[in-house]
Image (cartoon, rainbow, N blue to C red; front, side):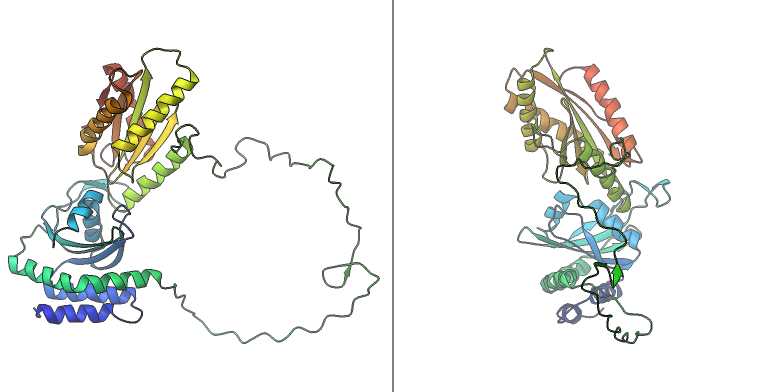
Length: 387
């Protein structure tokens, strides 16, 4: 293996070009893979730790790189940025869906991950991944740490330049010669009204009376004719997202989780008044308090929606099933703080996770709905969470 200073110099040379390219980033990955004998080397980037990472370059098997990203939630990324490196001997091993849709258990891999977090904004991830579980020697880890410390700043600058560079569209095929100039137009008769080029009007254009009613096509008012998104996507009382936004967002997040082999969880929250006949004003006041409770209990990346007057849906990206209990406890904790010791309503919570409990967003909603009904039957302020 070359000395750390030589490797670092080669990496910096690739990154300090006037206009680096993705090929330059890939050359860095190749250099690391060659010297440290890794099955996969990756460089990934996001504009903030809360934003999903984009693989900028990958040398080796892409599924190994995706397994690395699958392991890292937002909290893991922030923790990783505070240490020189972190070694994983079980990057994955959880159930995931193949591109064909069949469920399988991934084989555990091992790897070394390093991160660079700048000004609470740009987040850069560099990793080595091996197909099998492997023990990394201390001198190898020390060498990696030394290379990373002298390379990460120039690498971050290169990545941001690559992202800001305009896309270059290659021109293929023969270049067409310029077209000959058009012949001059014939002179127009000033007394003859025309349309287009020298074409006389066949019929006088009718001028519409501004007071006349506007004719509407017969199909314009039919239900289901307009397939565009609804104009209003926010609940008027709480300013949370509404059901229309919830369903579309959940479908997109499940597809993203499927693409990057990640978890996504869904939480349902039911609100039941102790006494029936609650007025509209009191119902709105309770809804505002529930929105405050959820905002205090959840992360900024979680999507909180009001589905019905007394039902809420929360989309939890990069969240596995082992965090349900923690989230439920936080909700009940802030419920007591905000609503007081004698609240006028009680809560019930249910949850479901992709891919463990459902293979698509529709089954995810159905599972959570069934468990929410069970929670209501158990009693006030109870949560029924899947195993």
